[in-house]
Length: 154
Ligand SMILES: [Zn+2]
Ligand SMILES: [Zn+2]
Ligand SMILES: [Zn+2]
Image 1 (spheres, rainbow, N blue to C red):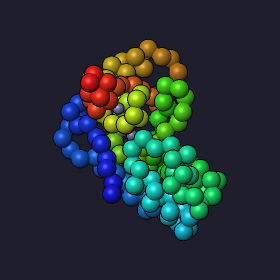
Image 2 (image 1 turned 180 degrees about the horizontal axis):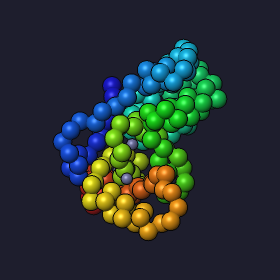
Image 3 (image 1 turned 60 degrees about the horizontal axis):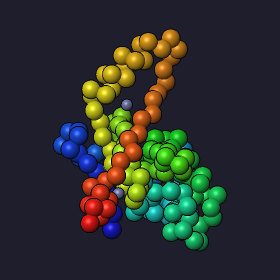
């Protein structure tokens, strides 16, 4: 059962295009071994905002090194997004193909994606002021999600 919580309210109504994890790895010459397949299955199940530890917990019979290595390969091929929680903990989320940013609930860790052309335009104009070559940017919004703020006020 895969539950993916994505907030489209700030972005277009198009469903996100998600890469096929196994195919993405195979295309880059990674062999899909059985343990790796297990890791991919667990990632597809957890989907948004999981940690390496939560994968290790779900995959007791797969070595931790395999879990961490598979995450690293998926980051390399662009199939996962790496997010940093306010306390510095890295979290991962299935990537969609287009450039996007995330909101993360500081309470429950729910990750949502958004795309905003106004923000991207503003960033580009800032980037023009920076003399060095810009190769990327990172921006995350830390939120208290609707579910958590409802619980908190009752
Ligand atoms: Zn993402
Ligand atoms: Zn929350
Ligand atoms: Zn951006």
